[in-house]
Image 1: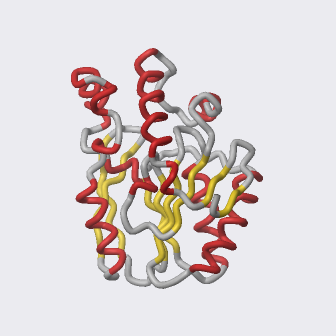
Image 2: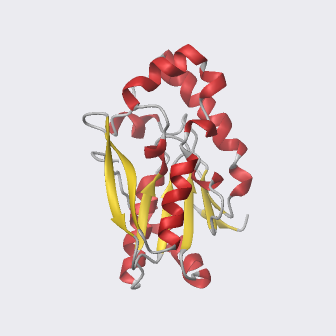
Length: 212
């Protein structure tokens, strides 16, 4: 997302180093890492640091923020959720999976690809064109990233929205009102339901548990 605020700390560096070891052991052509967790848990920070570390190893890894792929425009999403019922619509079906898999297919076939990119300042959806020729890996981060089919390594961050309130505020997330708390609770339920798809667990203390 354009305008996103990254809060990178030592814990992200330490966790990324451990995940890097796993990736380097398994790496093969067009490898895909997915990182899931709740709002403010550090998904984007971890993806960014891991991509930088891979670059030092001579591996080009492209981070993709899967939360750019919501079907409903950011300016319309709150009203749409309220009208249809948060408990009914918040979850996996909010993503445009067709476009996600089109972009992944372009990555695997070294093609140019156009992806959505949300500008957090204007809340408009821009388009980002990437040439995947020469890109060795994808690092997909987002609430439901590990639900993506064809992922080689799924990473799950255990922090819940209760643990990340400060990070959400600093990063300019929606205000902590009743609506937002209902959304976070519903997201919590859905994210926890896909946790078994991960092979690496990042604990609340940011310790890395491999093949848990």
